[in-house]
Length: 144
Length: 308
Image 1 (cartoon, rainbow over the protein chains, first blue to last red):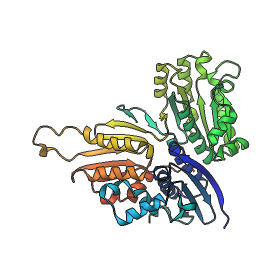
Image 2: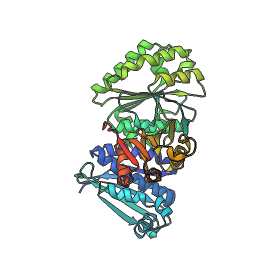
Image 3: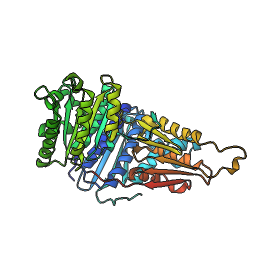
Image 4: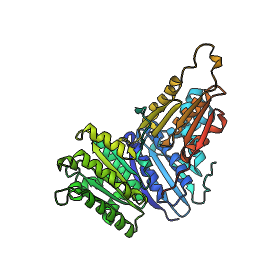
């Protein structure tokens, strides 16, 4: 399966608005429908914000496309293990109401709006790569 | 966060510009302006538009400008190589013989749009620094006449324009006039919020994200505080209240802010409503986090044309 890299962009907190707009512009080049692009943009930006907030303050966003799917990878440089994994566990196991209000919703919505999320721990247990994937045959308006 | 109480004009984030929009931006922060220009250029390049930026001669060099617009994406550098992205200087564009002519400038832009279309681009997107006028002895009225006269260029949606004025070097009168002439004002900062209060709520434009989430939450609290007084005791006579939030120019809302809005609505008395006007992307985020389970929340979704 031949992949094509459309974007590779490092980011920190101050870059987030421009990363958002650049991601949206890049996804225009994938041929995905408007609603699927919007869904993927929302999901990826949750992971990007999470990387800044909980994953060491910076990260790397990569967008790749193939015949079958579009893959957006967000790598953070947090102290690990995987801040996002901890968020997922907290969401699953239940936390205080206040915590729940603040945490876990980004991942929840990201899972709803994509076909698949892959989590890969970084080398030496530091940092995480979150890969958010949508299939090219995903139905517009499809929410899992 | 900027707050307004006016009801005329529309202030939008740059990413909400549509084909055929003639917009205006003022500011004093050069770095913020370049961020807006990068967003403006990257969006245009991805949409298959020809992008033309008319810079002041004292601004960044062409190489530095392309590098900034590119930001490591490769898109602006590629556009510069292929001719999709063109940088010009305001002196050569507006004052080719040292003098300004409104008629000549209109002909020039009309020809640029035609050339862009003939070359296969979807449309022309142009941003121009208007600092040249005062230095060339063009007075405020002449600038206003020119800006008014270009309206016809935008009628067929083949041209998108962003004119920027430096507040430090232009008169308050000119800045105010330009705000009135242009149908749209582009926000000076990416990722910020622009709030315009109305009697029952607020219009919130911009983007509710990590950098603006505290302001977004503050607006929701202020909406509660600003609710008109229910009148004298007993308050039970006070009828259901309907908070109205116009989020149609909110380009993005992160999950945290979505949750805050849903929490705001869920905390209202059962017979009160939070009516939210928004586009499809915000609707998707709200529904994705379970807005249907909040009966006080009413969504009114306005469709948006897809400019791909």
